[in-house]
Amino acid sequence: MVQLAIATGVIVLATGLFLAPLSAQLDDQAMRRALAIAQTTAAEPRLDDALESSRPSRHGPVQNEAERIRAATGAEYVVIMDKRGVRWSHTDPDEIGRHVSTDPSAALSGQEVMQIDEGTLGRSARGKVPLRDERGKVVGAVSVGIAYESVQERLLSTVPQLLAYAGGTLVVGALAAYLVARRLQRRTHDLAFSDISALLVEREAMLHGIREGFLALDKNGRIRLMNDEAQRLLDLRAEDTGRPLDVALPPGRTTDVLAGRVSGADLLAVSGHRVLVANRMPTDDGGAVVTLRDRTELERLGRELDGTRGLIDALRAQDHEHANRLHTLLGLLELGLHEEAVDFVTQAVGVHRATAEQVTERIHDPLLAALLVGKATVATERGASLSISPRTHLPDRLVDPHSLVTILGNLVDNALDATSSERDAQLEVEVRTEGGTAIVRVSDNGPGVPEERRAEIFTEGWTTKEPPRHGQRGIGLALVRRLAERYGGSAEVGERPGGGAAFTVTVPDALSEELSGARGTTPREAATETRAPGRPEARTHLLEDNTEAGR
Image (cartoon, rainbow, N blue to C red; front, side):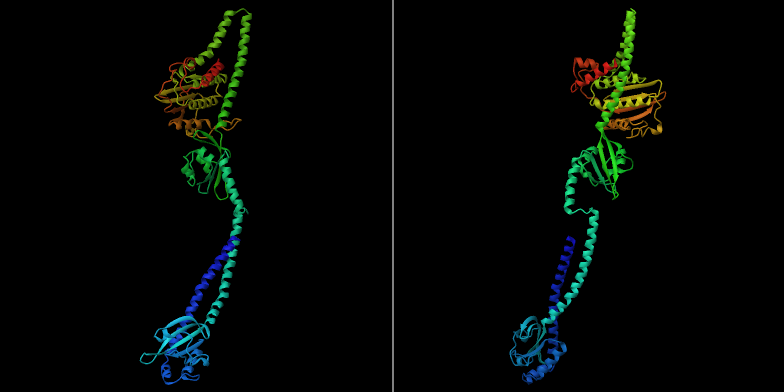
């Protein structure tokens, strides 16, 4: 209806704008026609002589000539006057001999006049010219009138035709408006403008309120829309809207997943230090909508759950072993073999104490030391041997120990999984520093990594294992590489001498410039003698808990 009203208004306006100049044009044409008839009449050679040789009368030569010209041209009147303004001819013979009703001075002074004026015969378009003799002297004037009703009739006669054209145009406009309205209704799903406005407001509130990332792409892969959570998860800016996805994001699996080059549901991707789950849904216009969920915390809790289950299994095995040792000790005491009982207890305690002391003597950071003590216990219960390289030495002045804990924990877990089928599984851990750079190396005697697969083993989602119950695999090594690259380092895999795999991770600027107050002491000694600045007390408790579990 709005389109139809606009079309009608435009047609009415166009018709009015056409009629206004048409009326003025018809008036001008009528005046010019009257002037032309007057000029032709004034050019008659006998009129000037008749004015000088006769008197004005009903049947005089001037009246007869004027009526002949009027009948031949269709003019309303042809009036010939002398220099005094007295009529010598007129349509009404009674007016002959009388003075003209309008001022003839302009024509009698030698000027030609065109005008719309009111006279004895009503309103008319007039043309007045001077009448000259053979010497060019003005002896009178000729006034010709065209009935104004004829001009109006010409104007009115064009209106029906014009309205017909306007009506046809209006019909075409109405049909076009109907088709456009139907198309708009289909495109907007029959929603009114108020409904669309309300939906837009609700969409903005929903997009910026939900805790899932939302990204809309057009058919050319440009970012059409994104909410605040998507900007946070992908480290994007509001200025990236409208830019191609491959330009706004660095190359990698995350970009491939969002662009649709990797297909599937609940695809894993790593953006910075975050673990994301992405789902991509194509739209009818060739674009796509991508939703992102941050499962970094869930992935961390899942890994902690796996570690806890492993520790529980280890404690269950230790409990069984501890019961056997108690039975053995009880039997020795009942048999009175007290010296053998003492030797048995000393040997059992010494093995585990030696493992903890071997770690804490070389790893002075409590978090990493506690991690290795716990992993050594788990490895023992899984039938693997975890040893510390003689080159291992790490002072207690790490800038970000939690990142190294993540790196080392993931590498050891992967090594334990890789050697699970080996009868004599062996793992070696080396953590050392070169200047301010920390180097973490974990090697095992498992099947190793083929050279052609080494480039993709650090890709998100790549794995050769069955997924755990809490989620998916293929994240650990990707996080290791991202953490290393975050500090400007690298992560690589090579072949261990004698067979197996060796993972090496370098982390530049891992050590702080200031030395800890516990430099050169073990974590247990540092906990009792002094505290490193900024080290939470819970870290020492974690070490003690893991050390006691090892013992």
